[in-house]
Image (cartoon, rainbow, N blue to C red):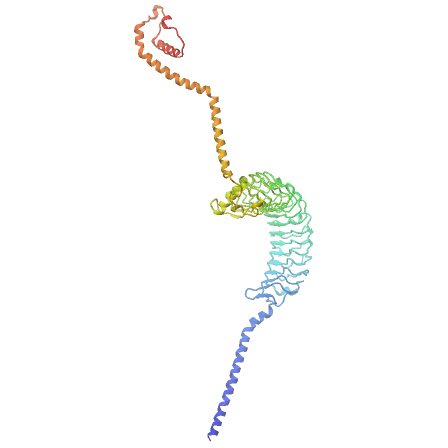
Length: 565
């Protein structure tokens, strides 16, 4: 009976335990499925739509793809995308997939293999402001290539294979402010190629095969502020070639193969602030030709063929602040007063001129605002104390020259030591000067050498010079005084004798008056009046005679007594 009851009890507990297990499994599966439903729509969709090697942010609406193997533009990205950057991939063409991204404001497809852009490719990108297609293989563009880009302000086509710019090619981008066409193969520019670009501020035409300044094509660009047109083959610049660009502030003619410039080459550029004429073939500094640029502040003239910088080389450029003359293969000498007219100069860079051996005394003097001087990597062996005002500099670089470390350079050693210790002038940023000769000092830092090592067994040359000046001045003063005394010796003698004589006369007269007064004389020698017919002598006259008698007698002259008259 007991057994029967137990068997009933066991059978009664078995059913609820199975149901509990089933319920637990069902709840767990339900929770997993619910979690999957909640999480996956966002994350899974994001992972599925973002190409390999890209970063997709649906919050900022930015997609950035680094170096990869993409050969077409993805069409599965967020349609609301605003910035798309796909660089260093293998995209060859832009097809109709662009129509899916009408909200784009920034598109960078640089460093791909683009060679073809069908007409109206960007017809739906009416909000796009920047388009970077640089360093691709685009061979041609037409007046329909950029149709629809009504908001575009920046267009970069640098580093492609363009060989010409046809008429109205940029008519579809009327708000363009910056256009980069550098590093192409452009040889022909239609006179109306830039028609409609009245707001263009920056234009790059450098590193092409243009043989003459395209003045007619530049006519519409009244607002142009910067023009980069170097690395072409101009040879010369025609008269008033840039006169239509009245607002131009920066002109880059680096590497334009210029042999010379005329007096009217830069006529009309009254607002020009920066000019780069480096890496040309100018045989002399075009002083008169540059003088019309009265507002010029920065000038680069390195890598040309002139051999010297003469006095007043930049006359007329009174506002010049920065001057760079670097890399010239023939420059050997900078003469005294070379920058005498450029008193506003703040920075001079004269570097890597392998033939430059002489900077004359006073070449950089008279420049009160000069703060930065770079004279590195030239062939200078020594420098003079009077070359410039060293104490006012903030940055000084004399490195990589062939400095001869002897007593003549002691002044520079003392200056550098004082500046590094902060005892003279303001703190200066300077690179150590290393000795090139003599052999015993080669490779040593000038600042670390003592006067004895430099061969200076006598006082500082500057102190010696001061002492010599003082001695010479003193000798000159004494010599002048001696000459004056010699020339005026007679007057001096007369003045001295006159002083002594007047003192003698006074003493004699006083003695005479004491012994022989006027009353005594009158009493002893009464004189008859005029009626008697004799000569009447007035006492005063007699006294005067007596004074004169005493005076002449004092000089050893015998006089006739009055009684004998």
